[in-house]
Every structure is written in structure tokens, then in C-alpha cells.
Image 1 (tube, one colour):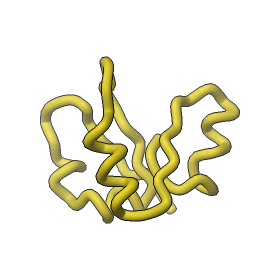
Image 2: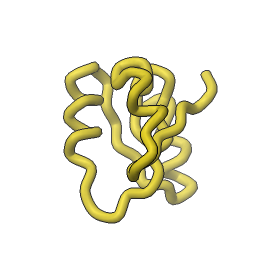
Image 3: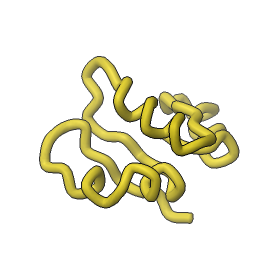
Image 4: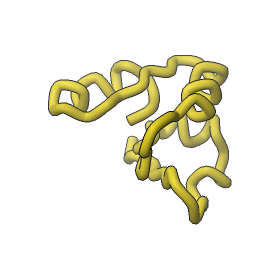
Length: 69
């Protein structure tokens, strides 16, 4: 999960790895800094819009999906 704290914090309680990014710069930096075997990243709407549509149509890992608002 990558995005604003208010949107991802509940998933952290369930055990998901979350990356809080509150600004466009933080979103881009977090995406570029993904490390390890990351297969799928769930993006908040804000994070998805910040990264642009190309991220959501990738055919290589990490794949990304946009969570609903």
C-alpha cells in the first residue's frame, strides 16, 4: 500500500506493508525506492494520479492497482 496515512493505516493493522506518502514528491520517491521482491503495489487514488497512468498499465513487476476512493 502506498499513499496517504489516513488511507493506508488500517491496512497496516491487518499486516500489510504500507508506505506513507503525503506529497507528490514523497509518492515518486517511495515508488522509485521500492526494494526487494515486490510483486504488487496498491496505490491510493492520490498516489496513482501522482504517478500517472503508465504505472497502472505496466506489464512487469511491480504491478500497480488503484484502490477505490
